[in-house]
Amino acid sequence: MSIRDPVGKRRFCELGFGASLPAKYLQRMHHSPSPQWSTAVSTPFCAFAALLLAQWFSASLCFAEARPKKEYEKWVAALASPNKAPPISDAFPEAKFPPNYDFGAQKTILDTWERLNNEIDHAFPVLVEHANDRGYSCTLRDGYGYDENYTVGWVCTHMIERHTTIWRNWVQSREKIRTDNDRARGGYLEWYFDWSKAAQNAPNGKQPSLFDVQVKMFDWANARQEQEKLPAARQGVLVECLRRRRAELIRSGRPIRCATWWIEEFDFLIPGRFYADRQAAWRKSEKSIQEAVSNLTSPNAPPEIIGGKVMRFPTRYSRAAQERVAHFIRTLNKNVATALPALVNGVNQKSYCMTLQGPDGKARNLAVSEVCCLLLAANVNVYRPYLDDLPGDRGYPMLLRPSPAAVKAWWAKFEYNSLRQIQHEAFRWATAVAASKRNGLRDSHERDVAVEYLQRRTKEYWFCQVPIIVDVLARERVVLPKDGH
Image (tube, rainbow, N blue to C red; front, side):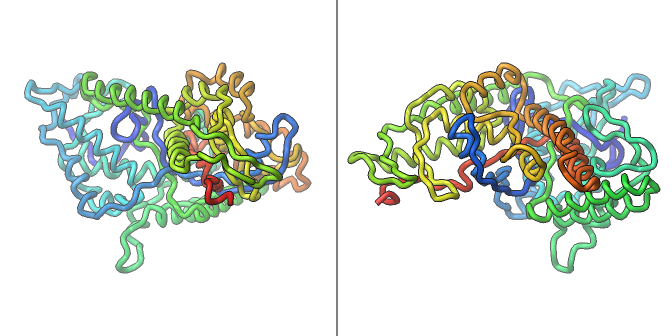
């Protein structure tokens, strides 16, 4: 029998949504920093596309408010299993669970693990403090079918290392990097970033911060990259990409977030019946999402708009009803990973939904179909910040245009994909677009950096396994009766 201490395997699989939903259907919404951007152009295919192009999108991943430190300490304490570690034979490494082994308690550990990872930006100091706890936590099976027991400290360390090995997607050593599903896999294995040392060097009286450690991580990776003896042009491109990624992190003001683990690598050993409640929660969530789309239809008639200004509202225009509609829009936006089918079904509804005023100060009435198209397109074209500066058409190339016909054609291809898979494919598509337009940039170094950066950003996205959620109302104002007079 063995219990794995906080060393060894660095990669895990993603499982579940928050602490309640099954991975095969849902993807969690965490933070993946992305700068804000703006462009004001119009395109010929529809007036609504101009709205999408003109809007400033805010990539927000629903960060939780910080809890008291004692609460995170309770969560870490809950990672310790009341069970004894099951024996594992050296001859055949399969765990032999005793009859009295409480799998229900292990499910609680799984849920706690996910909650800690979801709030790692706040829980980070507590995870650091418990990185060496040797109490038994869980038993996992790797992709080769081998079982192993793991400690509380290993679980804490794994969560930290998932968030402090992101640099691997941005470096290259003298060896040629191997790739697997666009994840960097080799050529840097002799490098090691000491996150524990970086966490210990926090200013006096200040708790170690994941954000600060990740900034130090990119500083370290940049210094390490500069030591490599690569061709000068190649070296310059890589160093510049690292510098820009660090700058993007600083602008976001939030740490980069990663999912808990990768399901193709490990399996949390609890019987399948303990996932039934997750499936039930997913079905309940799916029903509530469908209801949210049906509630996008406003009971009000649209106000009269002339020259982008609201001239008058109908006599019985209900402010409270519009506030409810806005609530449902935000609900769908927050849960867009699960709302994709419902939003697609809503793109043909022509009924009045909402009146919004954009950053340009102009008001417009939006139908349910327009809102659904906007939510879908904004959360598919998440590569936009990295294509804005490339030459070519005005605006930016769109994988998904916000029109019912475009949504229908797009959904026929991506219906069976998760939001994470859809966004990863969008990044891959944008990389190809960037490569095709690189010759439009005068400076050869700049065009190489532009393409390389998007390629590396795509790899990081797949490594982190965290969908980007674009808040489409972040720069919009809901126009209500008192605002129109």
